[in-house]
Figure 1 (cartoon, rainbow over the protein chains, first blue to last red):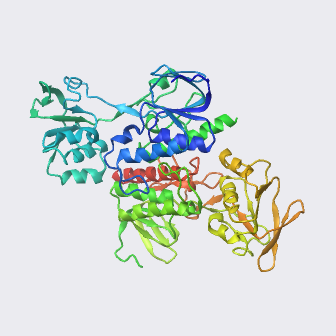
Figure 2: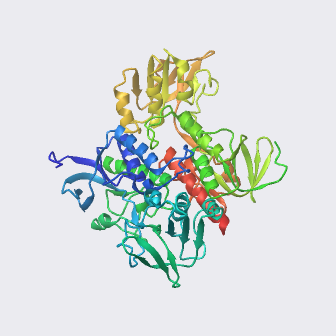
Figure 3: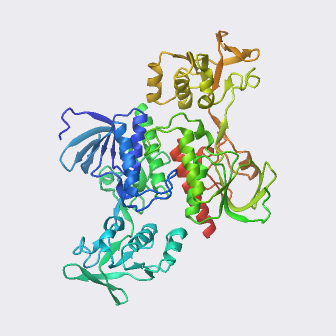
Length: 301
Length: 301
């Protein structure tokens, strides 16, 4: 696809997770000529096995909720270009992985975060051969196997609970001495007999031949292991933001004001990519709504 | 009902609109002993005829969406005391309209706003006899009648559009020379032949015998009229906040930080009652989630 007619969009939203899709829903409400560029839809919300805190729905899977969002966006006539945005120049012009170019008067960056890696021997080698960054996606393949989750956050604990539905044994390996997950989740962990938490420990090496066979901990101990799920958080996807000279905080998150404005005029950001507190679907959505409103106000001037 | 066992809640949420109910959903996630006190549920979201920007649902009525929220809250086991909170003392102790008293370690104020009045002759006299503050609630009673909406905001324009489904003629009366509603809405207005916008005008008097019969404008002109819908925004319900010495801004909104903390330790606020930008259901929900998280963090210390 080549953008031959050289349209200029009022706003291009980069990213199609909860923040980006809500920004689109609001941008249409403000009658902005809107385009989404994103290689996929749903973002890391797709990795949520079970969502019980999206208001109005007692329980739903991440992929189901994101499908509802996508249907909503599409019902409003917003086009999603399923390519990766690889370059942004001032003006603004966005170039995609397929070398297509799109012009816009404003941008909303809603690229979320990418998964953090352990950076240990065997991690890359055994990716897809026992090493995974998504319990929801890959858990069912480890039926009756021994697995571990690395991390201490909500997503790590939720991952361990999910894996216990499949695996014969689940270790939760965390480098600190107390989990940082919500109490509701850690309580569920304690009553699950398949799960054992190993505190104050890190994996130093992943060993195997064709598939993962064991892990080595920093105390030298070895554990037979068939699946390793790495759930140690994400890094904001700010490569494009850097091209525009957007200010980031110490965690590499985009610094936004109350209206989701970055330091670059006409560029807004929303969701996990920003420094707004509490990264949840509902807070990302609110960010997206505010960013669209701010883009609208910027264009009115 | 008397709270005889003298329980102390981790948090009492005052108000049960989108902000208050989402705060409850999150408070339960953080395993807080939670109570909601609110004379009704849904808040002014109940007045929305049609909601098309709640992510994941193409179109829903306000009452339906709020019913979903209420079902969610009740599924989590949160009790809603359907009384009005009339007094709060430090500590904290909340006294209701029924003289019941409830104690809590933290408070989340989510009382929203109350409708603003015109304060003109006839307004109080004809309340329920032609004067209304809710197009959604009372519109259907004005089938084939002549009505007007006062205001220029989204809710005023939406009200006019809704009333055009029932009434024979709809005037939108606004004191300024341009509406402040979203372009998508004002466009719909322009193509609706039943609606006429009267700019730069205010009603000075409402006249009738048993029911409203006509209005007088500030230019002296009189218009025959059977229904008057006043949609000129709301005033934050901050009477309780004032009892606690909570700082308000120039619009009487509660000043909160990024984590929904007020200047009084242990007291948080969320939704339309606060000074956070863009009063929408999704932003109120995000506020509620953040307030619950802040209450949890406050209690952990």
